[in-house]
Structures are given as C-alpha cells and as structure tokens.
Image 1 (cartoon, one colour):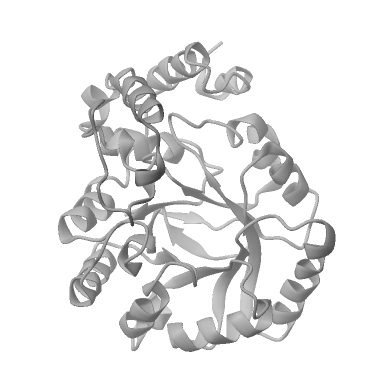
Image 2: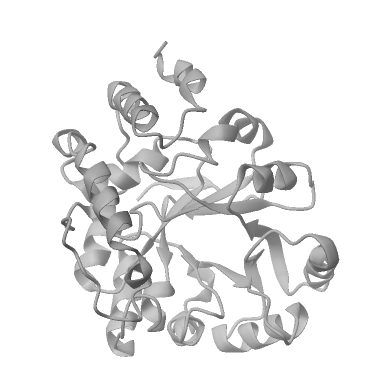
Amino acid sequence: MRFRDFGGTGLKVSEVGFGSWAIGGQGYGAVDKSESLRVLARAEELGCNFVDTAAVYGESERVLGEFLEGRRSKWIVATKYSGQDAGLTATLERQLADLRTDVIDYYQLHWVPSGKDAGLFDELAEVRKAGKVRFIGVSLYTVEDIDFVLGRVDLDGFQVAFNLLQPDPFMARLGKLHEAGKAIIVRSALREGFLTGKFKRDATFPDPADQRHRWTREQIERTVEQVERFRFLEQEAGSMVQAAVRYPLSFPEVSTVIMGTKSLSQAKSNFGQVPGGRLSAASLGRIQALQVELGLGDRWPRWLRRFGIR
C-alpha cells in the first residue's frame, strides 16, 4: 500500500480506501456483520487506513463503530451529513455514538448546498470549532460544484466520481485542482461494477437493493459496449479492476480511491493487488482518444502534456 497527502490537512491516507456502503446492507444486497468485520480487519492488515461511510448507508456506521473499538488511532474516518430532518449537528452526534468515537476526521456534506441550505457551511464550521470534526468538505457532482469548492478556503476537500467512463468533472478542472491542493476522494472508480469487465449486454440485477437495478436496458448495453473498448488496458494492468482503479491513481491530485468492499476476496484484490500501479503515458493517451471518440469527455487533452503527450 502506498500513502498520499490528504490535501493540505497533514493527514496521510492509503491510496486505496475502504468504501463502506457495501457493508451496510443497502445498495449492494444483504451482508453478514461478522464477515464485514473480518473484511475490515483484512483491509487493515493490507495497509488500508481510510474509510468512507454515511448515516444513510444502512448499518455501515454501526458496524464500523464495533470494528474501530481499540483500533481507532489506526484509521482516518470520513462520513457525511445527508440532509436528515434532525439537522446536521444532531445527526453528527448520533454518528459519533454509532462510530464510537469522539471526533470525525473528515466530515462531508453529501451535496453542495445552495440557497436556503447554504447555512450548513456555517454549521460545519461550528462543529469543527467545537472539536467534533477535524476537517470538512463536500461530495459533489458537477464542474460548477468544483468551481464553488475551489472558491472556498474553509473547505479542505471534496469527493467526486471519476473513472474511465466519467472523466468529467475531474478532468475538466485538472489544472485548477493541481494548483489548489485540496484533498480529493474518488468514488465510483469501477462505474458501479461495470468496469470489472464481468457484465455482458444481457446483465440483470434481480436484487431490488442493488443500485444498478435502476438502470435501463439501453444504459446497461451502452455501458457494456463502452467498457469493451477499454479492454486493451488488461494487458498492461493485469485485469480490468486494476486498470480501472489505476486510472485515477495515475493523477497525483487524487488523495485516495475508495472501493466498495464486502468480501475477503475483494479485500485481497482491492488492498493487496490494486495499490502501487500507474498507467503508462501511452495508455493515458489512448484512453483520452477513446473518451473523446465515445463522447465521454473532451475537455482534458491539453493536460496530457504532463505525460509527454502532445
């Protein structure tokens, strides 16, 4: 496992982090708590020290709370306020209790508030001043969201989807991100599992709890076809999983890539095999060309100069 700066916070985080939505029993099907505890322990053995969760991820925070007892100092814990009716401060107090900790290392808003919700930033500042959280940020979705975050000195970082099939908004603002030095958590590196390369055009997701269950047949077929165009990366990386995660890890602006993990085999792959690799400049060039051809993102070719590509 390699470690990276978490923006300007002074924290060092494992370049592959533990995405805990999958162990919450919602979004990716049912799980066994005892198995989840073993999976977390294996991730720790393999060098993972960063975990991302949220109160809306089912039982995730309570499972983590049980796991973290006696080993809290080994982990950097990130969680989120997701707009619960109780309000941010009350929700945070419940999360502290569920996680069995006195402080959250990195507390995020699950979206970028505006209008009447903008006061949440003041509340974030208050809970940080009170010592209940150490650093703060947001989970975001658009280029405009990134511009907003970069304009605020009080936010330490953000979380964003970034993968072979979704280069923007990250790549659209790569130059500014390099200058800003914010902590950046990458989610969805595997595009909800499609970039593992295991799904075919006729894939179905019969479990209603599976978030992919909501995809239309057309979306599934198109996504599978797009993934096939990136299979050339398997020769360099060894597998589609490793290629998919090494893509965002090829950018030093990224602090950590969180990977949903719910089994020991996934832990072995995610934290034992994926870390440490980067894609070559030649592969990054081919990726860029494919993304433009497929209409996935055409804003970042100028940044290929950093890899010696014109």
